[in-house]
Amino acid sequence: MPAPLRYRVSKLDDLSKCVSNNSRDLRISVTNFLQNDILVGKRIAVIHDRFGTLFACTLNCHGSLVSVMDNGIDPDISLSDMLKQFAKFGFLIEYRPDSQLSGDQLTYLLSIANLNYDKIRIMNVYEYNKVGERVNTQYVVAFMSMCNPYWLNANYSCSMNEFKERLAHGSVANLTKNSQDNDYDWSWLDNNIANIQDILDSNARCLE
Image 1 (cartoon, helix red, strand yellow):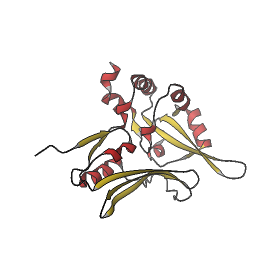
Image 2 (cartoon, rainbow, N blue to C red):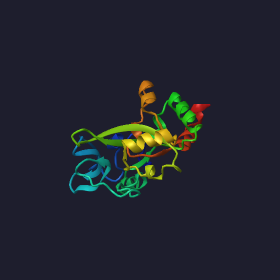
Image 3 (spheres, rainbow, N blue to C red):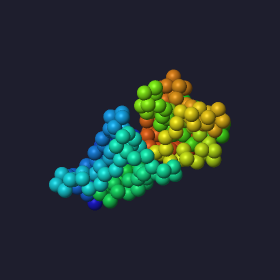
Image 4 (spheres, one colour):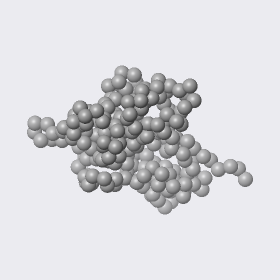
């Protein structure tokens, strides 16, 4: 009996390339919503050619269609629970978003860790323009989780005032410009709050 197909992916968009061990009529669909004011986020679904959608979830969604949850409540399914649903339908997938990091990017993360920042994420920061419209901007940030417990909620968005306050306090570091200047890809952080030390430990050989 042949060994089952197993996959390791570093980007959620690559889930659609995985094949089920249970049936060739099953597939994973990944849809990105980019309607800025109405809906931004990602929908991931397991679909059967005959029975239709068997499992679906949305990740990191915001916009007028999405209710704002209380602080500390994460409305998204966890990645581990999502992978369990995939396994139920024969998709054996390991999600390793940090496997695509370059040596330079890992060295940069090491310097951030040495400054006592323990988490990294993409933060949605909002402010209101002169006509009262909400404007959202995404930043790549490292932060100290002890000082910013709400930031451990992947769906938490902060105001520009809070963002500037946390930067001035020193418990948050804005990595956006340096990342753009060095072409660092952080797209795998979409709806993912990563532990910096875990990333460094799993890529230790690249730092030797």
